[in-house]
Figure 1: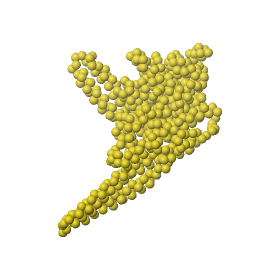
Figure 2: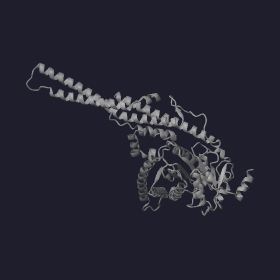
Figure 3: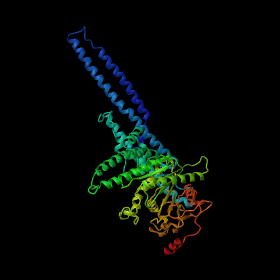
Figure 4: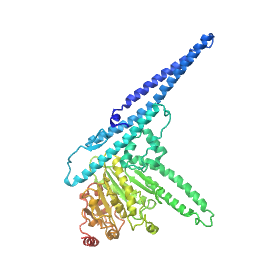
Length: 543
């Protein structure tokens, strides 16, 4: 087993020098091998001595040839190994540099400790700072663990090659075989960091479906992989649609006995989802962070406007009841692009901070109609929210761990999506702000259960939004202690929000208020001055 000190001692430049020297020696022996052939005298010397001479030269030439072949084999082992070694050492150096800068210590056994014993932060921010430090400590430890696995695999592979157990020309598909499909975002990030450029390229080209949805990888990598999957999925679904169409053609009974008609309808819906995704991506400055065409009966996806790898502020929007990729992705993306612009106009620092906003539709939102009868999708239970939360948690964590510096991360959740988001926020995700919009309840009676900094949970409830008043999944968030109610009425010439679906309307007062939260200026957001009638009734009910 390779140790951390072993990796620290590795010198890829020395290995490169050795490889170059071996190649130089091989060229010399190859020249000797050729020269020995020229010393053979075929004419003018016959007899037993001549035969013995030719046999001796032949044997010597064979020995030189064997030595030259072995030198070349070792040289061909060490040359690419030097490149892979450099990548591993570089990854460790970067990890140790980041850890030292952030006041963490990476010990010889790979464990990570927080060097700081006290924090220079305001009292109200102490708990969130401690939470974030613990989260970062765990993340660094997981990265070290994954790096050491990669280093051990590299060392064992090189040892087998040098021993002659593996031909130097054999391509070992290590990158594909060890993709941590069930790993945490930190494990995924460490896995990607430890890959050589060649391994990364091979995965992107040959197996994009393995990494496009891997939380913890950079957004630009996921986008590149998912766009390849998008293209291949379109070809696959078009072929499926054509086959099902042929089955139904001139069939008197349609799909009565084969379900071909239902299959064709579902396939066409999936193709419509791909159309919506491509329409959104065509707007430019987009990243396709998730694309799942197999887990559920409908396509799910996550699309960012802006660069989640570099943005100072990142907002993630979680939609609710009735939302689908084919029906709503384009509209939601437009709303978030407008919100991104609004937030950017609020930021006046120099250089100006940047913003990214994600439409996260990577879960199966509940549906009306026949969906009411599906126990996994009915809006009458929290089953869909709990299932969605298991996907949202690693996605949010991954936005942090894929970067060297954490963004200011906000979650904006509408309607049933707020129940999904709240379920996710029971775990540590690195979220700094949470805004529920028209929420039917957060599934909790206390915001202290949510791992969001104190004073950074907000709720907006528009006039006439009956969904927010009913409290189908617990108390109206606006009536909970620790929740700041945001104003939704007309203000400063901006129209107010009414009903259940106007919260992010371009130019509205609510969009402006939510934008302030995303910009990290929640204290400047206009607050609701007086509760509504249903809010008062709920407060009385829960006294």
